[in-house]
Image (cartoon, rainbow, N blue to C red; front, side, top):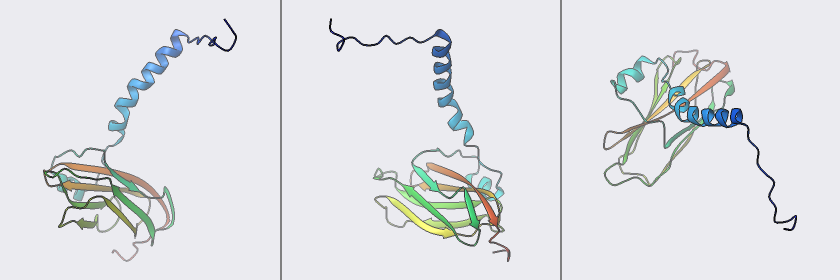
Length: 157
C-alpha cells in the first residue's frame, strides 16, 4: 500500500467517548430548559398556561445597549406558512419597562415571511420576549437579554 492510501488511525479513549456522548445528550436537554420565560405578569397572563415553542421565531437585540432611548431590534420568522397555520400577530414583552406589553404587530393578511426592523425604548437591563400567535393556536417564542447603560423610559412611557 502506498502512503497516500493509508488513513491515520483515530484513537479515542473511552473517557473522551463518554464525555462526547454526554455532551451531545445534554445539548438536547439544555436548550429547552435554558429557555425559561422571565417573570413578566403581562406575559404570563397572555400565555394563560400555554407553552410556546422556541423555534422559527428569532429576536435580535444587542447584548449591550449604550442608550435605552433607541435600541435596535429585529424580529424574523421564516415562511412559508402552512395554509391552516398562518401568522396572526407578534406580541413583544418587556421585563422592566413601565408598560410590559411594548408592541403588538398584527397581520390581517397572511405574510410570506416576517422581517420587522425597528428601534425600541428600554428602561434598564432586562429580558425582552417576542411571542408569535398562529391561526391554529400555536405559539412560538424568542427571548433576548439586554444590558442597558442609560435607561430610556424615565418618563414612564
